[in-house]
Length: 319
Image 1: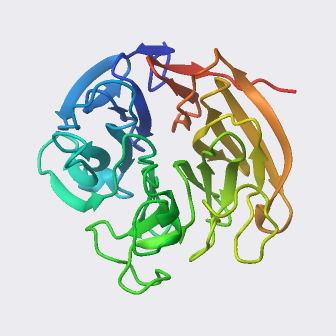
Image 2: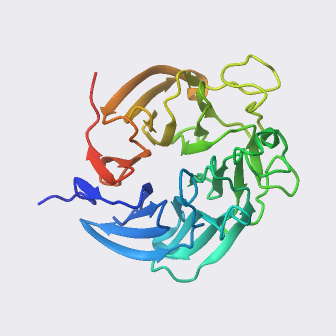
């Protein structure tokens, strides 16, 4: 009898985005198109809540994106969720809310985040300091404002669990932690250094994997890729043509991230001082093109990929 938390495959047609695991063996899944939040346990899906995502048709990137479990989830039963709310493009906005694992007790934590038909970001992660980091896209329309620390798009935000501003943020009374980003779609903390690594999607070139510094400016849209400009922090590695790097996870000192364009999972072996250099980049999972929205690692030591219509368990290829 298998002891895996999830089955080999879950078919899910609401465009799943994020998979989150609790320490006690529960798993949670977000659906972008439907706004549905699911609990998944050994093949059984239980609908917890449906968020009122903005009702758009045609090509768009709005909906229900990231979920993050409270660092003390087994006690608090709190789940943080990022979604696009509103009735149309005229009034839509991105929002972070907190709900209980049974779908009750919804509370708005962060509201009125810039929303766009494209480039909403929406991936979140709790840091080792138990503050919440939120990646917000520059909403495509206001790309230049990624350089403006008073505009919350094109940023990584850092907040307390109740939505207040933590001590130590780089800008007074602001949730902004770093800026000059385009459309962040992956955040992962190194288990030893506790440094934050992010996937930032480029335009037609220069997808980036960045090591985040507090208050750092990552250049968009003034520069992209390795600019060697002292005003900006260069990425660890770039990809041209673009591969669309997605959600990521550390397993040991290795960073795994998905590629939507390739339908693959990359493994970055990191080295050097503070693991700030890419020693090796290898593909350890190969699916069909236009596929992987994120890679995840469960408490029972299993790898999963989330794709637009399903969740799959996989074993990384070895070179």
